[in-house]
Image 1 (cartoon, rainbow over the protein chains, first blue to last red):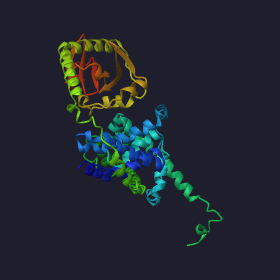
Image 2 (image 1 turned 60 degrees about the vertical axis):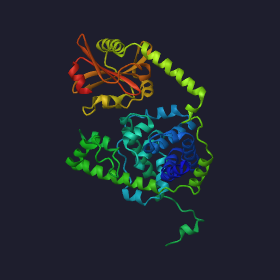
Image 3 (image 1 turned 180 degrees about the vertical axis):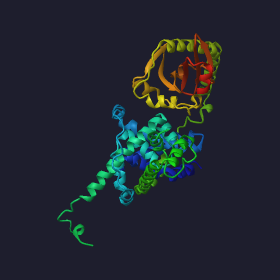
Image 4 (image 1 turned 45 degrees about the horizontal axis):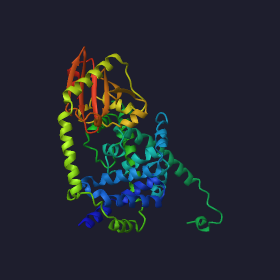
Amino acid sequence: MASEIFSQLVDAHYAPLFRFALSLTRNSSDAGDLTQQTFFIWAKQGHALREAGKAKSWLFTTLYREFLRGRRRAERVTALEDLGPVEADPPAPEVDVVTGMDAGLVVEALQEVDEVYRAPLTLFYMQDFSYKEIAEMLEVPIGTVMSRLSRGKTQLRSALARKESAGRSKVVAFNNLSARKLP
Amino acid sequence: MNNEEAKFILQGYRPNGTDANDAAFQAALEQVRRDPSLREWFACQQAFDSAVSAKLGQMPVPAGLREAILAGGRVTAPDAAQGRWWRSPVLLAAAAGVAVVFTTALALWPKPAAASTALADYVMSDAAHGDLHSGHGAESLEAMLGDPATRLANGLTVNFAALRKGGCRTVNYEDHEFLEVCFNRGGVWFHCYIGQRADFPGLAAGPTYQDKDGMSVAAWADQTHVYLVAGKAGRAALQQLL
């Protein structure tokens, strides 16, 4: 029975957990390790959680804490918040451009956002958690979540614009014959 | 609420509409309905957010990750101690000992009313003679406290360590640290003192009020913090805040 519950939990959450881990670690291999580690912690102690409905937020919170614990860069995270006022909205790439972009490219842009904004932004874009739940998971006030989302989206727009611009001006290598073929 | 405030709040509005009934967004959404330029901004914002969300959801997960997690889970034994501590006579005896000590301590502990009275006196005195204080990093809490929609006793999100690190003024009461954040509600200034609940286990959770020398104070506690809000506007003004 315990094994069945564990399987259900993995099936329900391993993909979004991996995507969250990927945005944090910027590395597929590390993200996989972090996702596994989170479930192993659950296997070891998570069964003590009385309310099954809280399992999802427990898993995301645990993954985030494990990530921070592994990295030990709390000072850097704090310093990043002293960046001054939010910039005005940069010219955002058209929605059609984002829609036409490869998912990997959009995630790459997300990974370029400063970590302190990236964690709440990724949780927001997963759409599984409200701003209140994100505040609880990251242990910050609600106003801070709103502020980080605002700054994070500004950085994401800039990163997407850079990706889009780089894509347009990309020079095809002379020896890449397949890319040089006309349709 | 102006458009900039509405934009700030709506950054947290998920594009799938899950937050449609969240009271915190209602005023901003009303502003969206009223103002065409804000409506246009919000539509672009939602379309952009929706597109990014969709892309994130499309990100493939490595093949074999699910199987690796399931296999690892099978060989990860749960903590043996969890859920079975009562089967150990040693732990059972220890628990009984703790219960006896706890009961004794509870009987000898100063009465909550007395403790909160002294603390409230201290806070009223400090607030009456002090300036208005805040600190870097306390802006969002200050805004939350000053928001007419916030009922303070319904729960505040406070990161004690971050506030202290941000330079919030701290006061010391019987070797226990309190942070002070001042806020303005409807043109009236209040002083909010935040302490650690663990330092005041005997303090009553429900709001209690005291008045002295033209100052009034409300004290209450949640699971992690104790709060005292003091001001010169009288008890009724404090009751409205809570």
